[in-house]
Amino acid sequence: MMQVQKTPYDPVDQTGVVIDELDIGRVVTDVRERGYAIVENFLSAEQVATIRDAFDTEVPITEMKAIGTDTGRTLRAHNLLAKTRAADFVYLDPRLRAIVEGVIGKYCQINIATLFNTLPGETRQSLHQDDGLWPIPRPHPPFLCNVLFAFDEFTCDNGATHVVPFSHTWTKPVDQAIETERVEMKPGSALFWEGGLWHGGGANTTPETERMGFFISHLVSYMRPSDLQLVSVPREVARELPHKLQRLLGYYRFGNGVDGRDPLDTLHDGIVVHPEAHPAAYWRARD
Ligand SMILES: O=C(O)CCC(=O)C(=O)O
Ligand SMILES: [Fe+2]
Image (cartoon, rainbow, N blue to C red; front, top):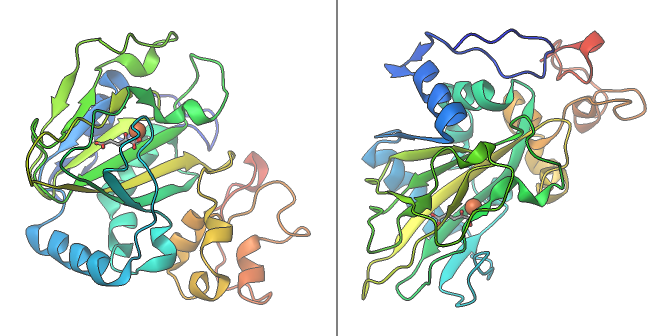
């Protein structure tokens, strides 16, 4: 699929791009055309175990119900970037970065980073669009790109995600009874989807099998994220992070920046530590 890049904010053409044997172009095409793509074995068993262990020991669970259910049988921990460094390599993974950039463009930020555990007894979540939070008329260009990593095996019995293929371009709400595909995944596999895709977690009808997943959502840089990373991650934590992760938290220049300065410079007490910066506008396109 050839795309003509018109502005720095347009999706990056990843046709033919292969990273660590993953055909990024194919994944991006699936997400853009079908609304989602599954990448098997994105994380190794060891990586899943490491992150999971950190989550078990470092990350306090926030009591937040899953949207669209009222059972309280899904545990969630939001604001992961403030709570653990164990998953930093995932946000920065070149394959993940390339896929997200192919879907919503190079200039984006982390919208949400959540750990969730769907417990036995959780009911089916309503079908919804994650980009429905922003009241933008449809159809609209993709502005949200999400990924969900399976930490447990996702099966139809423990609530594997329901998706409605191709629905990301539809302009009318779907019938909740519409036929869906189920996304069954082994631990370490990843489901990428475009924010407009109708989807929802399934019911966990097992007696004791949990379904834990790690969710990362990305939003274009010119819109306000749902979980405001700039406020959520303390500055003393943000200051120590890799440059790219700082950008992904929202420390990039947009419009007037901070009194005309790159926000990242203010994080570093006014010292310009990186010659390149996140672009705010076409005439200042920088990384
Ligand atoms: O539980 C899942 O598989 C998906 C959850 C989801 O879509 C959401 O909470 O927005
Ligand atoms: Fe969702």
